[in-house]
Image 1 (cartoon, rainbow, N blue to C red):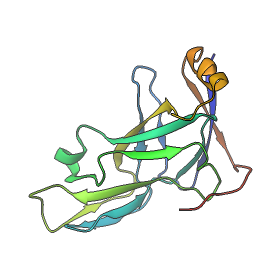
Image 2: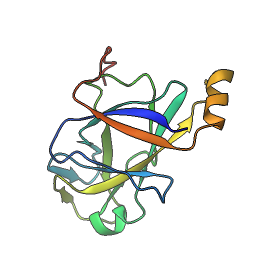
Image 3: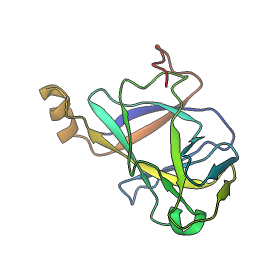
Length: 153
C-alpha cells in the first residue's frame, strides 16, 4: 500500500523528481537567488505538501550540490513536520556558500538543489507506526489547493 502525499506546486520551476529506484526525492529551486558568503539565504522550492500524519520530511543536499553549485544546506539538514501543510507553507532551502567559496553564488531558478526523504516522526502514535510498517512507498498527488490552515514560517 502506498501512502498519499498531496503536493501543491507554486511555480513553473517547482518540481518533485520522483524516481522509483531511490529513497529520496529531488527538489528544484523556483526562483533566481544570490547567496552571499557569510549570510544564509532562503531559496524557495515552490512546493507545499501535506505529509501523512505522524511523518516528517528530512531535506538534505544532493551529493553533487556543493561541488557543482558551490552552496550547501546551512544547517546540514532541513526538517519539516506534518503540521507544516497549508497552501502558504512553502518549502525553502537555507543555502550558504561552501567554505572557501567565492563571495557570492548565483543559483538560477530550476536548479536541482536538494532531496528529501519521508520518515516516521518521533511523536507518531502506535497506529501511525503500524501504518508505516505496511507502507510500500508514497504516491504524490498534485493538487490545485491544499485545504486547511497554513502554519506560516
